[in-house]
Image (cartoon, rainbow, N blue to C red; front, side, top):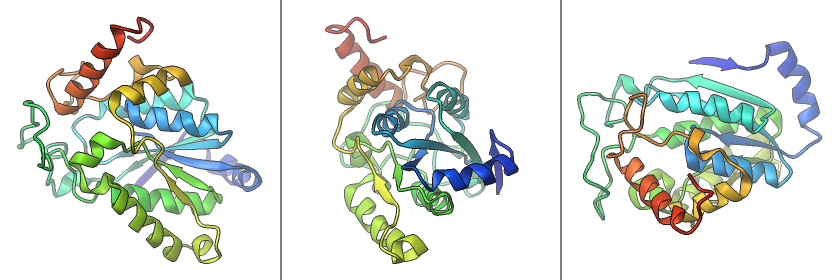
Length: 242
């Protein structure tokens, strides 16, 4: 597992001591609209925010370019990129190029093959390690109502169970001041998220949602369809959204 950061180890070590005296939040920053909006909400709440992104072997690596841009744009105090190869065993069309990414829209009641086995469990576990080391009070996640309907590791019961685990598995949790898993978008749909993004000044055009690995969004995958549909509905009544 490889760790890259925008700061040197020495600088991080000295900064870590100062973070302990502030409200620090770890943001799981994929580079997409949802995670960018959730990150901006943490900043609005007055928190110092550290971004955490993952190169997990996804075909849409373009999202990491977006994450790097957003980390600078939102003035995050640090941005870490962790490389962990979930593509080694596949199990998802996002990590296995032999599988086709669905392009016919979301199928009600089905978990799509874009679900990556164990992805959020791995991501949150690493975020907890970072949070405990930095004494961060929260981890903010961009999961939302649409993710909830499709993915088992984006649901309220999953987060509630993981919160219990986090409190049991960490020193800070056992001491009664564990890290909070915060999902401020979990009840919101894409239109509501876009409205929040606009209100918070998130550069929507710089976020990346497409599941494909091209230079431009495909416009056909589930993620593109949901984003385009919401934007089209909103731009009819709000021309500042583009």
